Image (cartoon, rainbow, N blue to C red; front, side, top):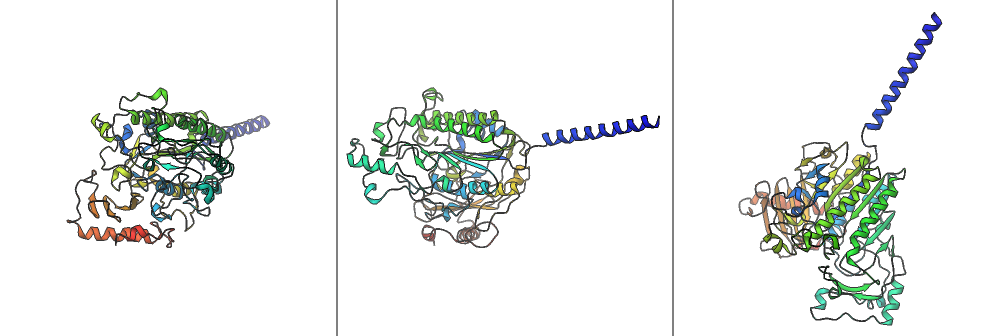
Length: 530
């Protein structure tokens, strides 16, 4: 009898252990994201604050169901910003966690054919190199536009034959390619290109430099794909393409319409491959749309009923949906932190036609791309992270794309070096529902010499080049989001305080706590405001 009782006690004990182990395993399986989430950053190009339905429900007429669905599954920030009102500077800031005023071009974009030398030196920490330090696989697919070291000597540069649309005028003819040019192109396009994504922490890159500027070819890691054989220029484009910005070398059969679908396809394939690995992954997906050229695919032409730009936005939204569906199919969506934003505001092209039809691409905001006003840099800013970010939540706190790097560090329990992410703060408390601001101030550049500084709801604009009617302007965004009422004359003390804040942020080399850091440029533009 005693033996039987002892045996039953042992069985009950083992059963208890099994139940406890099963319960612990179940908890572990449903406890939410693992310590290192995958990170997917989707960056639209020139998408306005009011171009996304969930940001502009009353005066936005373009359907964006996939971006709206992303917002309903996560958090929508209503005071989210790019660092600048232009493509290049805002990308620099997102990748480095550093305000664009600090780079060697001091907030100005790279607008020339074949870009310019890299704005980001290889020793500077980026979101990609930081992720790699923590065991991530990293990929960049899309539009780069932060500079390359193209292997072009002085003689070869003279044979490129590139001209901007402003140089060409309205009555030009596309020139024939000379044998000397073909030989130079063969040399240039057979060499690796330095200083690009793979030099800055990305394991792989596939994409283009700028959608409407030569060279008209794809780049795979650090190699151009194909050898150009002809010139492509604005007048050569099909009717379905709105505009290309310049003429230059193009590979045979280059088709603007295929660029976005090709990148969309590559992104889906890359997500599937990386999700099957035992490493977490970071993918940076800077889309080429809805920037010019408006290369709308056949199935999207006329779909919006509002014109080519609106069709292009709809196709961009669909591309976002396809990529998110691929993430879901890969099985990685539950453990992936998704960021969605735009590099700056709406370009302003066809704004009058859209407004007549009741669509306001900047929503309630003043200005467009290239402007220091809110329409230039307040952008859609959406985050989804299952198990951490509450679905359907809205956050009104001031945030910026520079904050991605510090947020990654906070999630991974890492400390950034003093000389990295100097303008980046963690958004993790906001993801978890905190209502306290994580940043009290931020600066933005217009890309044309005007700078804005935020302090709470107040905003000061300082024009360093005299392109605005008033050199110094002050607005209370809490009461005047449309920036209609300049309060400089009523608030001289606040103007002086905020101008001093702007100068301190710029010249200290950082806006976060820590030792002063050097800026890359000489700040000539900013000093002109003195």
